[in-house]
Length: 224
Image 1 (spheres, rainbow, N blue to C red):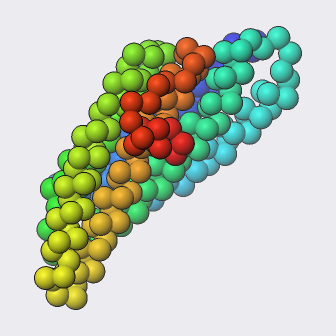
Image 2: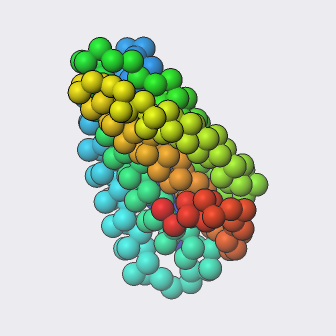
């Protein structure tokens, strides 16, 4: 019975994760201005994601209250699921903020830096890969997700430096939008870190050990 309950909770997490993936996909489309994503969709998804997160947390707490005959992996799974759901919800919050800036840029007829869309596309793949790892307990794939975040970090650094260097040479509206794009680079960078953190949490569920950090940046991402 316990295993069936845990399987149902995992299915709830996967369903929530798919909503986050669709949110990130819509955000990416908005940054590309291809007409496939809308702020209305992103905001509606965020409401559903917030509700799903609370529901998962309540189910996990009920599960833990009846803790008889639970092995160590089951305990790791239930505790980690609460953390993972919260992190997924946070990613949706960041995506909503970026989507709003994309709408603002469109209204002001200002070009969105291509790096933002590139970062968003990488994060979209990371979210989908993370859901697959969660489903399969593939610890080696979790490590690959962490390494993928290096691409997000690189684009973040390149774009941040360019926006900061150009900031003083722009007029009022241009400077305001550049500042918003800077916020977006930060939101997207945090989303990449959060995907890494989820992957590390799944690695812990599967192996019972913590993934070794190869750099201080990766170590910081584990705490997001």
